Length: 209
Ligand code: PRP
Ligand code: URA
Image (cartoon, rainbow, N blue to C red):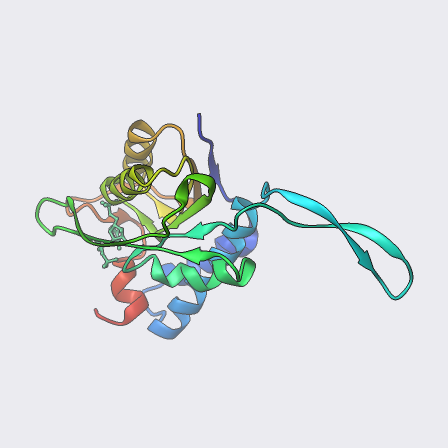
């Protein structure tokens, strides 16, 4: 059974409030989503395995921990997930990066896959799957389906804002994955947008409003 963690940190709360503000422009919005991804990544990666290596400090020789095993893979859900990659790579610069392109149909709200490029050996790696918005959950569930088909079993989905409907749908479709959420909002509206949310994350990151 996977765990669901709602990040309860004043820095994350503060930055999400700034992101919500309709007067926040593209440059600031982009910086904020990257900063939040880094703060969330710190939590999502806290159980990465380590091993001891010998190191000589200016004072003494000692054994100290470094990351061990295969490096994690970051797989943003395009487009908006791209905005979170920089913050995660700042934590693990040697991580591999895959891409899954999904676009939500404006009428049916169902995701349509237009790109999938993943590293070959996902079965032994942790995959971090960032997407700022978890609305109906359709896109996240489809992205997890794709990653599982490529053999990965350690999947950590990460979003800035989730709707209760999307969280339930994702947990039902994939009860085994871990889910990290910056803030759980009230509900979806009739257009399947998160309320109060922050609008269209992809448009606000890339200035395509
Ligand atoms: C947004 C968002 C998620 C999806 C969430 O992407 O980034 O991927 O919608 O909605 P869901 O939970 O109902 O599936 P969108 O499809 O608008 O594409 P974009 O990132 O290219 O703007
Ligand atoms: N996608 C977004 O970018 N925002 C929402 O509120 C819902 C889906």
